[in-house]
Length: 146
Image (cartoon, rainbow, N blue to C red; front, top):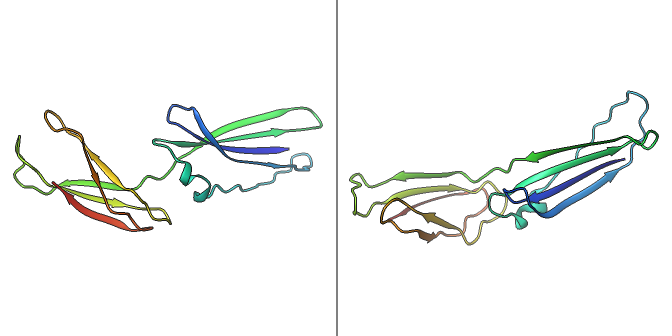
């Protein structure tokens, strides 16, 4: 019997939720090999993501005839949206306002809603959160922030 479980974890390794659990019973002859594919679709996890999340995959196989158990785990890397920041102001100086160019791409097949960018810097620059427009599926947002 083969069991595959996918879990969403915080970056600390603490589980957030189980995304899926699938089991499959195989009848294999000696030295026989079978390959099975288990897909994790975007819709299975995207609404449950937390900041800096990772998806862990746990596989367990049990041979009923011998009682042997094999287990393995791995991590899936999530593709992050591409974010590019650039200085638009030619004369950036201490205590002077600057303009920053922002290019954000949405790699998903769904609209990103309630987008924000948080800008921080050294010294007297306080944390500044700027609301961006919603970003349609597979589109790129280009804007400037002063």
